[in-house]
Length: 331
Image (tube, rainbow, N blue to C red):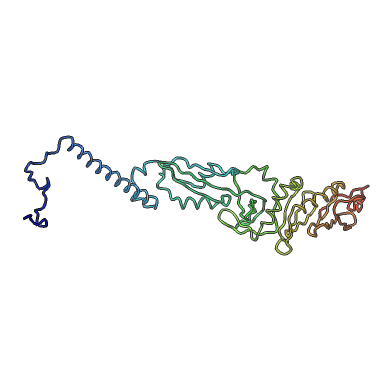
């Protein structure tokens, strides 16, 4: 009779065989490799800890905690600060040294960058400023500068009169590094008040219409712009009008309600007619569009209108006595 197949003994494998032999001990090479692995782990941990500690020390120094600053960092004196400005900038390293006024032998980590940036921006000739540390001993100051569009004269606290340069955004500053010959070509600004602000002043009101007029004149009519002596904003708020006084005394009225290119073209036409009459001082009103009233002084104070170029006798010149030009007079 066959045994019951369900009661067969379980099969045995080689793992069930008793193995009393001791395992082989680690060789010398294996022990050396193990030791090197442990040393690498310990070294990596030490380097990482040093970096963390150094970063914490630097961060503490930057926050102004001089007690936590490493002594070795204090021992490296700062080199002369480096100035980086825009292409049209005129400020130089001497200006930067005067502005920062750093103590002799100061280290890079001892600098308070926020306070130094305030010193740089206190001069309104500077529009933006960024100060960056470059270890171990370099400080780089990157700035952008304001460009003047006009000149003005302001009164200081003691009553002294001082000339300032006016930028497009209304900032007025004393100016450093500019070519005097270039500044002499800027028109004078009047009819606007200036309030003290740090190392300069701020114009009261919006001078953007003036900035656009001067920019358009320099671009499209530089021969006219070179003859401008001053610009007044006295009527800008009420009438949106700008008054330009030319070097020969002629007064020109511009309107800020429309573009300046057509007004400059009309002024060019009128100025060409006026140039043929020496000694004439006129008042040219460009605020009425194509009709340009011109008041001549002296002669008979006759008001004539220039309606654009046309054939035939010139209506402006026909009003003047060309045989004996009158003497030049101020309006």
